[in-house]
Amino acid sequence: MFPISPKHTPSLGESIIFFIFTVGLISYFLIGLGTVPHIPILIAIFVLFLYGLSKRVSFSDLEEGMTSGAKSGMGAVFLFLLIGVLISSWMISGTIPVLISTGFTFIGGTWFYAVVFAITAIVGVSLGSSLTTTATIGVAFIGMADAMDASLAITAGAVVSGAFFGDKMSPLSDTTNLASTIVGVDLFEHIRHMSLTTIPAFIISFILFVLISPNTPISADNIEKYQASLDSTGLIEWTSWLPIILLILATIFKVPAFISLAASSLTATLLARITSGLTWPEIWSIWFNGYTGNTNFEQVNSLLTKGGINSMLFTISLVILALGFGGLLFVTGIIPSILETFRKKLQKVRAIIVSTAATAIGVNVFIGEQYLSIMLTGETYKGVYENAGLSNKVLSRTLEDAGTVINPLVPWSVCGVFIADVLGVPVLTYLPFAFFCLISPVITVLFGGKAIKLSK
Image 1 (cartoon, rainbow, N blue to C red):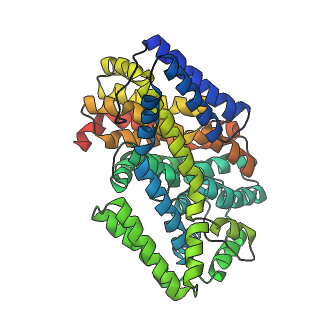
Image 2 (tube, rainbow, N blue to C red):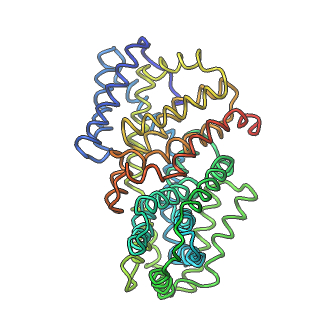
């Protein structure tokens, strides 16, 4: 929980009404007006300040609540900055290009939708961004499906499923780092624990995509063009595997995430200096601004133009605002009042996990914002899990199983609007075929009763 006690004790009814009002306000700006999420959250902060002052909560207490909320996310902020550096260094060392190129070598046979799902998942883990994966590899697969007269709806569902598998399981993903940090779980512990539900969801989804795949062999023309363009960058060397191997070893030996990511970044940077011919000033510039692809194939350029500290500032500013908003919800007593009711009624493990999943899904549906679904739900339920003797790993896993993967299934959400636009397939059209996103929350609810035993 935020390290601050409430300075006002509203009734349950008042808390629920005001919470719904602020959520509705944010929803209107995001869905109705199409603004970036920073604007409505900042306005909601103004509203909460007015509410607190009207209830005779001092300005200093409100300010302390807001800053305490923001402080609770400083670990995530520093990890996000490091992730921007890691992505840049992995680009110039050839680590991300070699992972993508290797993924393409598995293309073949007739399991088209299953192959799309698997390759998109590999690229998603490599990039740590579902939207970047969808806008690059996803668009390419949609083009192949169109040329083959395959179903665009199923192909889009496979792309979304694979991209969000990567978003969940990649140590480069901002949502993965946010979910682990917000509830105080080590990044790699969080990823390992997520595999308990994510791997079964992946296997079931893969089998479903195999069963509905067409019998027509896959055309390899576009794939060869991708691989040739990746090779032409001159970034791919045998040493390109070393940063990812180092990160895997660090995960096995449970090295803290910050140290693991920093060591892998520095290793990749040194290798890039040796193999790529970049000067130190150029490398430091790429650390901040990211790498820019310069091949003759625009799709590969879009795929490689990524990373840098600068690329993470949008996310960091949103996290700080949202956590400040959450701090105000606590200091004004709105969330504590609702939580007290939860604590009395939520006693069984499955009921707690179902309620957590429902809250994360609800925030996605009503606000359409992925980060808020993780942050608000995580901060709201930490105390509930602690009182029930549940490990925080169960909470962080549930946040991803029901928060991260649901956003692309909401037509008015940030991810839903973006994906429908870049793929040219409406959300409600691909939704029935986004198997991984649909199965993940179901498995986390079914698995919930056993999760506490495993975590203990």
